[in-house]
Length: 338
Image (cartoon, rainbow, N blue to C red; front, side):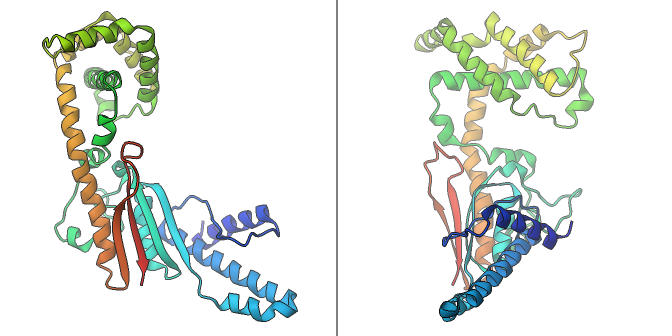
């Protein structure tokens, strides 16, 4: 569908809902942005509609014609704001700010760096989400999927977890790693597609949290082992209850991927093999949490450099505005035209 037609359709729908009762206040338009061109088209259609409304108001209000005409001739000033704009949407906002002169400022708080597009042998798009700046493009720099995933980690969020919640998270990661071994053995063709079980893992985590409240003996055993400074192998990961949880996790994961559990599936053997490495999960995720901000900073600095490369007519800054334990993606890129 043509960009202009899509924009007009969205604006028409908004105007019908508002009727003739247009408030004398800043207006917002909520829609799904598919491209920079669509965002620009939506902006232009909105401006044209606003001019028509002002001119019509001037004609229908004779005594106020002079004032309305002044309003109609007043330069339009728009601000693009995105709170946790996902993946390439943050990039689209910054490019629209540069390409659409009616947009005077932008406030962009990004999110989901793992969904950023990158130029590769399979994707030669000239408007990929990373890198944006000329400086980084000149280095032919690429992050790759693993690094983009790493950029979503938050050391502040991990440090705010209590002991019980932290152990439950590590346990869930051990289940996912062991399930990967199951796929490797029984469904290698599925494994090649980098499958994701999505929010099923979070649902399972909530189930485990409720279960831990019902079975405090498990948590007490973990605490006792820590206090006595025994070897770091986690008691909860050696218990029958934990194997039962792993089994349920695998069944949920098979269902999520629309797969049937193999008849020769031996989850007990898989868990016994994986259990020897569960004590490494805590240190491994600690390292990931420490490196995550490095990747995030690189992505954000690339966006800031993109704006600063546009010349002296643009002022751009990068400001932390949220508590990172509440919102890990807490850095806003703010730019305005001078």
